[in-house]
Image (tube, rainbow, N blue to C red; front, side, top):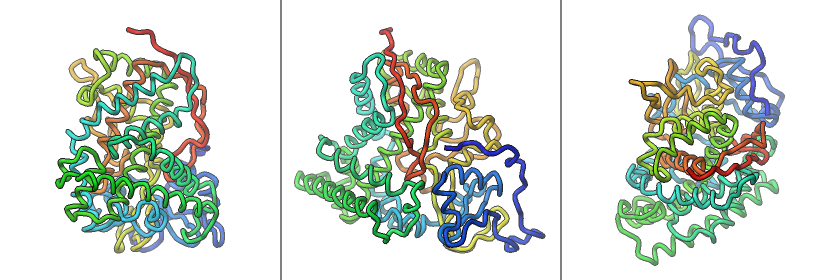
Length: 481
């Protein structure tokens, strides 16, 4: 996959409206083909297409999908306005609902307005810091079990391994019980989700009602998964769950208790269980894949992280990793270089002004971390993996330049980095994911050195930014300290 921008394109001045009139012209963009619009370019390589849009046309660039106009937004100031300052003037929109409604229903990801606020209030206790930290032991135990299955010299597909690991962690924190019976319907559904939303296939751009073989398989497997979750909910109810969501031991218990209180209905319960199961384990698996892959390509940085985490007598705890700036920088930089979520979508509910243009209500806005994270306006040498950019020295001590998931140190806008979205609708599982990635990375690096067998990643823009082929790393067991 092409990840570079042709020489000279960064120097092009984007078109701007004449005489300062925001309604004078539309944002610039390629004309595309009759009927298809720019679908052929998106199918060829959606990630490279978004990069070219930004490079050639600026922070707001027009494109077209089967006659429907859309805009790529890569200006951090405009992204902040959409996600934060004017968030109440935007919704997820019809396109995500049409494409993801069968998968996520009316769960937290797609719900709007008061229903979204009620659902978020109902489940937020499951994501308080103390609850997240309580999952730390499970995250470390599953990482140890993963490492115990390896031997010196093994070559692993790190994405497959990370997927199994992330599923085990999330299933335990979500379901709180033996998850072997649920593994197969989740695996099958995840496979169909990847196939359904693979942008290299023209069929992925067709309306949801078009009955392709891929769609039919996708629907069957989702129906099986949702039936499995309904059975789990029935088992929880039979076991007399707690009446207060704050007293639940896991996320499913929180959801069941919220339903018993009337805060959510039964369909929203299932919708949210599916949402957290997929949004949680898939993005975490990708984050761990890219972190280990990137560190394998920077042996000296891998060693710096190892030295930091072996300073503890045992594998670090959730509290201890807050004092691991190099580990944190290694993860944050991997999420910059390869953001698991390549695009967020919004639609204005009324005409708005962005970047000097008047944007009509209902148009699809594609907010692209992939593009912004690679923009040399904000990042020096953006194609390189450089955790050092996140670190500063204060009174002779190296610290992370930002103690939360925000922009790396330097003069750049806040939304030059947004792997978890932003504003009121930022990913509710952000703290869970960041803790999981740091604990897993620390635990594995204490036991093994990772070396690249796969040098160049081939990526596909599906529902997330996924490897198109196995990502192979060779393992070298570390001698006991």
